[in-house]
Amino acid sequence: RVIVIDFGGQYNQLVARRVRECGVYCEIYSYKTDIEKIKEMDPMGIILTGGPNSCYEADSPTCGKELFELGIPVLGLCYGAQLMTHVLGGTVERAAVREYGKTKVTVDPRCKLFENVPYESICWMSHFDYISKLAPGFEGSAHTADCPYAAAQNTNQNLYLIQFHPEVLHTEHGKTMLSNFVLNICGCAGDWKMDSFVEESIANIREKVGDGKVLLALSGGVDSSVLAALLARAIGKQLTCVFVDHGLLRKNEGDEVEGVFGSKGNFDLNFVRVNAQERYYAKLAGVTEPESKRKIIGEEFIRVFEEEAKKIGHVEFLAQGTIYPDVVESGLGGESAVIKSHHNVGGLPDFVDFKEIIEPLRDLFKDEVRKAGLELGLPNHLVYRQPFPGPGLGIRIIGEVTADKVRIVQDADAIYREEIARAGLDKTIGQYFAALTNMQSVGVMGDERTYDYAIALRAVNTIDFMTAEAANIPWEVLQKVMSRIINEVRGVNRVMYDLTSKPPGTIELE
Ligand code: XMP
Image (tube, rainbow, N blue to C red):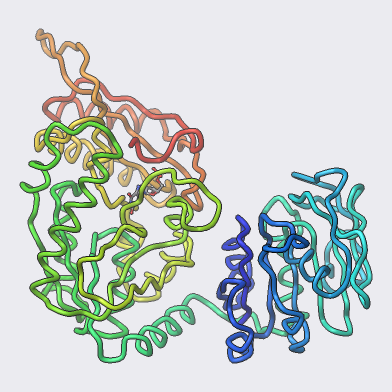
């Protein structure tokens, strides 16, 4: 494996992801990780990431010289490049010109890192410090107009540095550069696949859990379902899944989840379903503010979960289906601000009597989680099912949530999903759903005046759920959905299509 040492940069997970895309297993560790632990792991290569600091300042994240003397190839990126230079005796200074964005870079094609990379191409720069003098033993291998050492190497010691960001897709040949590093320079085989992730995770989980018990809050969404399947494979009945039906699920979803994971399903685990609909509706009565709704749903979930956990007694581990975009958006992944409080991250709980949290999917992007799910033998329809947020329809009903509004949005959403599938679009659109706007407006039906709700249809294409664009759904499909919803769902007299991208919109409406 290759390890990525994290210095707090915003693209760190992307580095890991690109390495995995080269077929090389990769894990991220904090820069505070003890050098002895790194030695024990005996990685084939080490990548130092970018970060927001200046390496020459006293309290900046750093690393010892020893890291570069292990005989393991090291690649420093951005901050990592500067730190390598600084620690090994070169000079890093504040640059006169801050380079930011797409920049023309000229590389030395003889450098191993740049095999099959054209002499000139575009790279993505983002730095205010620069390397003004290389450390002894290094020679420059790339430059830009403002950056004399956009890359450099010390081939004797297998040390490489790149000032720009090869992990970002704007760097045209970034993937080739990373693949040159991990395959040619580190000598990794490049045959790692998702099945290896699954096998390794199973081994890690078994080692960590021993004969302890694990509790998982199963939502029925892709992430927690994949996690349940992974844990079931690893530890069987040592796992208990608590499935809280909060009455904010899609139509028939509670029964579907029970079908897959309950006693009639194919997984070896303990499954507990709690029907808590009425409790939730009571708590949500009269509440309109989105964050308050999220908090109530999250807190109530904890209450219900707590009651169930108490029945089970002491458990050693709590498993969570946190995936990487959740970590970033909840502001736990470094510098990013809190955008929405995703209630499955960081918010759980002092109440359950457990020793440790395990989050085996924490480093994966959504598309990688799906691959793992298929690998685990989950059915296609479950793996490619619509991602569904923890607070469920609670955040797809703008304003107050009531049982009747839940019924409206469930029925509208079921029609929408049915028609999208019928049009053969269900596998190509990233996420789509109906939401209930809080707007009532006047319409006419038969000869009657109506004063009913408007449904908003949302459909977005996205790879990582951090940016998204409205999907281009054929007009006839939208019209069919519109007419069916208005005819079949009591309480709706208007249907709208939401065109907003993310940013500035978010995918969910609240
Ligand atoms: P947003 O609305 O933030 O959604 O653009 C991005 C992705 O995250 C899902 N989402 C959530 N998932 N708990 C979750 O588990 C939440 O509180 C939550 N809020 C949004 C959303 O469905 C989309 O896939």
